[in-house]
Length: 78
Image (spheres, rainbow, N blue to C red):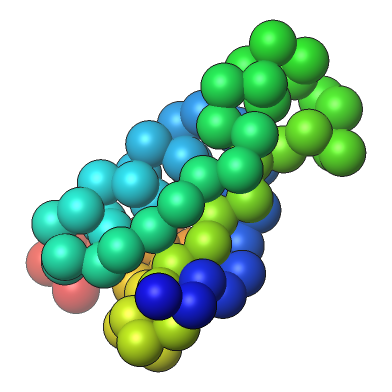
């Protein structure tokens, strides 16, 4: 299985959400520097890189783009 770079998680919270989305959608993934990034927060060279199976990349990309969409507030009743 060929793996393709998807994104770099900016913190452990984002990593947990990405991992959960991948698992819930049966997307094969690997995480580089998963545990090291928590030991040295703020060190951009050690942030966790997310790799997904080439066959699942398009689905994973759509999920990631939806995750990162800005939220907009809606007024009550409108």
